[in-house]
Amino acid sequence: MRAVRVALVGYGMGGRVFHAPFIDATAGMELAAVVTSDPERRALAHAAHPRAVVLHTPATLWTAAADLGIELVVVTTPNRTHVEVALAALAAGMAVVVDKPLAATAADGRRIVEAATQRGLLLSVFQNRRWDGDFLTVRRLVGDGELGRVWRFESRYERWRPERRPDAWREHADPADAGGLLADLGSHLIDQAVVLFGPPVSVYAELFRRREGAAVDDDAFMALEHAGGVVSHLWASSVAASSGPRFRVLGSAAGYVVKGMDPQEHALLHGLLPGTPGWGEAPASRWGTMGVGEDAWPVPTEAGNYGRFYEGMVAAIRNGAPPPVDPSGAVRVLEVIDAARYSATLGRTITLAP
Image 1 (cartoon, rainbow, N blue to C red):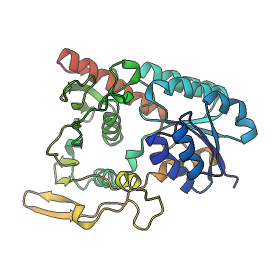
Image 2: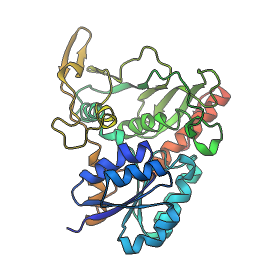
Image 3: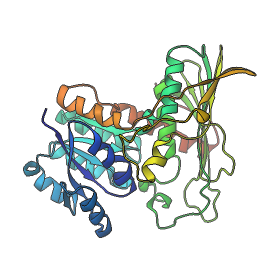
């Protein structure tokens, strides 16, 4: 099978750490081009991917795409440029993956989805945390009914990062930048809750700026009520000196609790590559427990693998399979984020349209 030739637009931490290694490791996929104007990042791209062409600008890519045989463009630029770059790639006739969040607002997200639909082109969104090992475990327990009827779902991304980086675009207050934790980690939290229990019917949110001089939210809480009656409580924080469990799921038959984080991000940040023996596996000491009260037993955590996203993209491009992440679901996540901002401003629950 001819390899899907990929252009990666953006080579910051997202492109370099979370995308390029999995593109390289995916059978039937080849990283053919990297786009970045930053001299240091260009040097890093040349060193890490000597077979890829390194280009300065997206405009250069659109001109060279046909000669390079590019079929898929992966957009991992700052959030405010997602719409511009994605629409240009679609106009040039290529399939597109956009890093989360798809756009700064649901309205802008719909523009990208509509453009892909009108052109009959494949579009997906990189919600890699669907392939966290602990989330895969929760999904299996919920799907198999081992917890009974689920009543409450708790999910946290809590960190201790009290120092601001004022020069980072995620710290900018302009809404077009989609900065802050609600758009960043909140995209993952909401997406996972929707995957498990469907779109919420109401949203309540509290957004805070805890760090001195912070221009964007760095501490967030959301309560989502789903149509089936499940309530999701979601936390994201950069100032959690003591963190709660990663997941706590309470059902009519049992509860499940797991602490810590999926090991893939730590591995990637420390230079390990997909395919390393034991990739995505959590040690037994980090397994969650399931049970009732004191009667609880360990549940092996499934191995995570963000590479399954790109395996799904190969299947979608070559075999017509559905995209690994439906972009309409990504728009729904943006609708929840928009509602959460409105809720936090008004201090009340917001009802969502079905």
